[in-house]
Image (cartoon, rainbow, N blue to C red; front, side, top):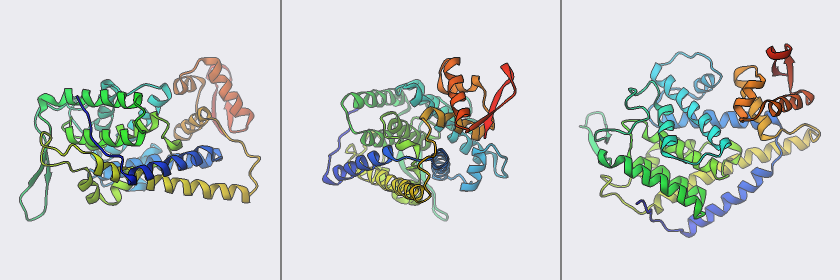
Length: 351
């Protein structure tokens, strides 16, 4: 049974209160579709760049953005696969939130499979490890130093299930989503359930928990940036001891680090939105159209693919044909999209 210990220090409570206040401001902010889509795209690209860079990926931000647009870049295959994989994992997370599917072992393993596709053998991608793994510190001119020994492979499956059950239980007990995400992040890193890709999986699962519990902040933030800006501080914060069995079981210090990072990122997101709001007033754009979350998903898909059909909308929104057609007709009436072709072969492109 997983029963994490932590203290709600004054520092933690104060930061959580500030995050809740920012959440209300961001939720109420009126953004134009182009503004929101641009911020959301930037956040996804930053999340992908930083989460993979932490693990040694050499791609820069512009290269990751090119991959987001399905463009070819000149870089090592593994680095390309890692970035493409993380983008797919984040999109999968958005789908899960839309379908309101709770965290499960199947979803947990699917996230790992997406993150490690083509970078791990098939029998390891999306599967628990069968052997011991160690976190090794490497320094030029010095022998490798084992700094952490992960959990016994025979216990990995049960430890992960215990964590997943705690994640579900934490929602029933109304544990703050930021705390639940932080604890899940560190515990996955501690168990190290896989041969590789543990850090990326931990960060992706933390994002899923936040999104599922209404702390997605319109998917405009990239917490991974905070870790990547000072990797040594991240490593020190997430360090729990020399091995899983003798680990430090009090999560308080890690949560103070994790919540501070979340607050800093949300403060930055709020500042961007407030600045856009002022610009909107200055340019008298109050009459501009504002789209629903469903319509934003449609426009986001079109930005990536270039066109969309009624069947695409049905898949994206998991809705019947009539509803899909209604969404497209509303966007057409708002002059956001233009219809091409007629009948079954018709499609829509951005206006």
